[in-house]
Image 1: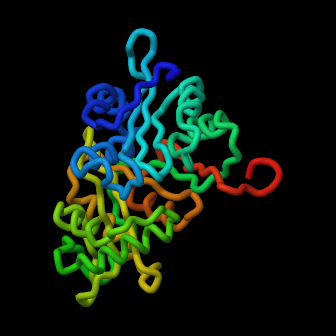
Image 2: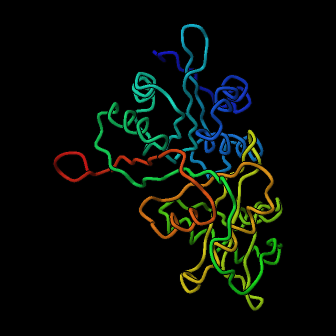
Image 3: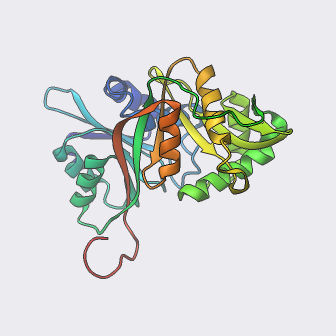
Length: 282
């Protein structure tokens, strides 16, 4: 019994059914929208999936869509805003996912409903740019678009960034870097001709763009390069801008506040350990 949920591996079918629901609260659903768009453009295995991307939406008795999810196995399920009943019924349909990511209360309701031990992998906060400001004295250097010659460096930095935030790696970082560079969605801050920081962003979707990733290698941190790169990117992007920060990283949270980003909502990534410690939930 699907409890009103309709599941599909056809992204076009999903967006036809649930696109209006997602776009009605596009800021809360920024990740579901961007992942769905990536699958639409690049195919169901675009995130190195072990199985095709999977989608679902739930309708109320009157046919109104009230909840949705996106999953690109083997990654965690991405949850929309939804009520507790929708979260519980979805948990019954997806008993074996490795984790869940979404609005904090929704992710916890889903995880509780599985009956499995779980722990918080990362607490994040979604921010929106309200008024762009200089984050501090501009460091030496300049921002420039990444080019084909930068692909090896960008690939290495994408891999380092994923490792730094604890994300699952992809098989081919070079392909990921080539795609980002070719789309023109990546700036590098360079000083003395040497790239020292990078900032990327998603394609425009439902009236907004999400800044990600922002990465500076350890040797070049605490010099203002990331703030300068983010500020430069925001200046050239003429639409509503969002970004996520890890609440455990006070440095980045303070930086984005100085740039002009203000909090919107909290999101949580929960994981189900394969062999949890003995005793209660972590």
